[in-house]
Amino acid sequence: MKMWQKSWREKLKKLRNKINQIDFKIINLLGARMEVCRNIGIIKTQNNLPIYVPKRELEVIKNRQQNAGKKDLSDRFIKIIFRLIMTESKKIQKNNLNKNTKPKEK
Image (cartoon, rainbow, N blue to C red; front, top):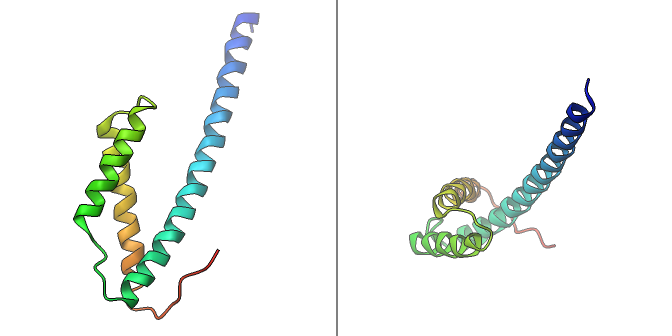
């Protein structure tokens, strides 16, 4: 293997390792977010509040798009990601409808 080939391969490997570390952090953050959503669902259930609040969802997406623009991320990309995140959040909240649970304090 030539010297220049080794160099770019090592750089690529290091960069991919960074991506792996970032992905692990993203998964941990999503897990933390879903735990908060679970607790929100419990509170909503206990107080007979709706799980889905369209106005809130639109506000969240708009806000995230504004923040993401500062990182050069497209509106469409952020909208897709946060729609997926919020769909999962609502699913977790709905799972609490038949459970008599209390929010976890942290």
